[in-house]
Amino acid sequence: MDRDYITRNKTRPVKVGKLTIGGGNPVWVQSMTQTRTKDIDATVKQIDELEKVGCEIIRVTAMDIESAKTLGEIKKQINIPLVVDIHFQYLIALEAIKQGVDKVRINPGNIGSKDKVQAVVKACKEKNIPIRIGINMGSLEKDLFFQYGKFGIARVMIESAIRYIKILEDLKFFDIVVSLKGSDTMITRETHLMFAKRYHYPLHVGITEAGPSLAGIVKSAVGIGSILAEGIGDTIRVSTTSDPLEQVKIAWEILKSLKLRQKGVEIISCPTCGRTEIDLIGLAKKVEKILANVDAPIKVAVMGCVVNGPGEASFADIGICGGKNQAVIFKKGKVVKVIQEKDALPIFIEEIRKVLIEKGYSDKIKNIKIKIL
Ligand code: SF4
Image 1 (cartoon, helix red, strand yellow):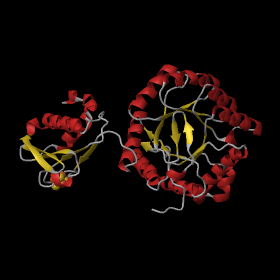
Image 2 (tube, protein in one colour):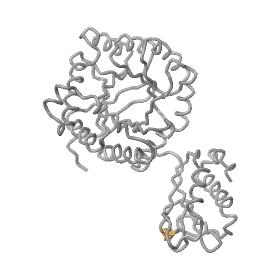
Image 3 (tube, rainbow, N blue to C red):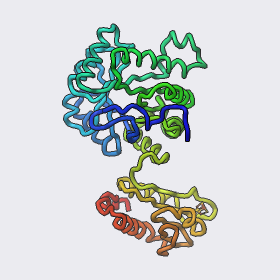
Image 4 (cartoon, helix red, strand yellow):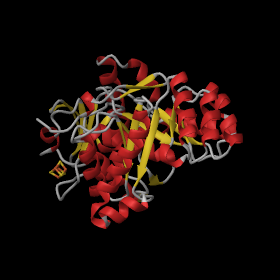
């Protein structure tokens, strides 16, 4: 599809530790710790947990020099790139850079005199690390808001980004990542489209303050998904009011549903209807839990009836569907086994093991959580 804006394949590649953001690289999943950064053990523990569920870049906040001084030790103990979040204080930024962080999130318009900005930029250049400029709909610049008004929020955010980018470009600094986050999905989308018409800097995409539980998940999926679907966005972060592990899992589901990244088993299950012959919702939940840690690109279907199940899920590598007091196992739409409903789950899991072996993923079998059976 022809688009008149710069898509992720053409953004400027920017190194963040061992990863490269932009330039057609994968859309990386980012998250942020909820611990006090100066509590090194708690912070490292949370980063390790986040990495296990798929976090690829981690951001921590450094609110004071004491926190910034812990970053070297934190970085030593983790495996993924470390980003630091700085507000206003350029000396904290300098300490964080000295400690070896992989990226700094700071707004050059917020740290005071030109000398201070120059000092931060010089330090980033020396360490060859990028700066993320973060524009947030919740803290707009007053003069711009006055100029464009409440119906011109996207324009205010863009103009703000332009100001900050110009400060860096004037200092011949171009390893820039930009975020343009808002809690309104459509304004955030509009802002990203406007930005990508003008700049080739990679974009870190998120819907900020997305809210709790179901509403937060839907808002994040619609907002982030609608931007990614345009070909825009190089990293993502989900900001629901929830456990950060959940945020990372949601981020992965967004990427998987757009087929941008692959992770884990894809479960296909029907919504159930009057034809359903088994406890499909219970069965699907169990299968999902049992396979949650199996990182292999197979499709597993859990369907309610034999009339439509095998056909509707014919693209699944393996599936199960319900019949009268029995269940049917099928592969690529073809029935391979008819079993008693009471034995359905263990036999189905055994068949999934066989599929993993056939497809060369024997090493993933150990991650099947059989204890749930
Ligand atoms: S697969 Fe069968 S039970 Fe499930 S929704 Fe379709 S017709 Fe209904």
